[in-house]
Image (cartoon, rainbow, N blue to C red; front, top):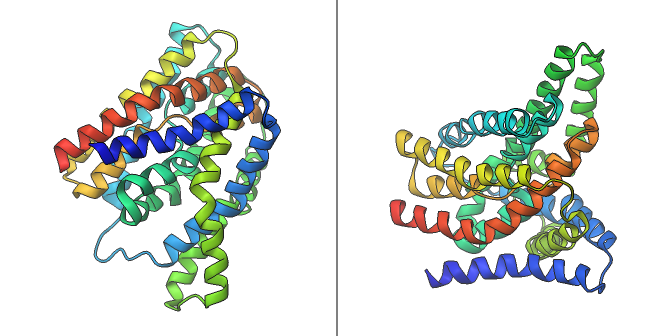
Length: 316
């Protein structure tokens, strides 16, 4: 357990250092936004390209992994929506934010460095299969959910415009570009020339450290606001219910040990920034998403170790 504890301390220590740097005024929170942009636009796409361009699936199919992970999301999403609307009395649109905030894992900024530190490159290979469809699936689900809410309230909406905006944002997203470019290069079967390979390695090598430090610095900017109780409730769903549901699925299906570990640990990661961006896009629930992101990240310091211990005990 000592190596696991060291990895958790390292990962969340970098987040903590970023937060402290913003708290004491060493760096402005705007720097966190710039570093996050660098991670999302350059470093992480380079890492995804490098991983997927050399990914060897053998005779494995990603479908069992996708089934185990994504089948738990509707359960957690529904619970988050009901808690937000029925328990805390928020409007249906905020319920959508509650649903997505309780089920949208931070696979990118936190998941990549954590999985790399604990499971190494084989773990990143598995996580990349989730990353390849995670953002498109969750964004599409959010758009559909908001569209249904608006129609239920009798508000006019342009489905065509929403779909076009979604597709445009998707195909221009640097993460999706990195994924598709990596898969395309893998299909050629060619080795990457040495100079481009070194450039990609240079960017990819910074992904973990920059992403974690930027995440901590950005969290200082988001902070906590308003009524924090919904954020606590949604964070509990994110950190406890979602990984438990995925664990039940991987045991039922019999997923291979490494894939099973990655699926459960990924499901137990805290809420990322995307639910906040979704809430901002639709003009409701921004504080709810921000609180959930901050509280779940704080709670993940403890629960991440818990789920790592669980999967190690079950799957070896």
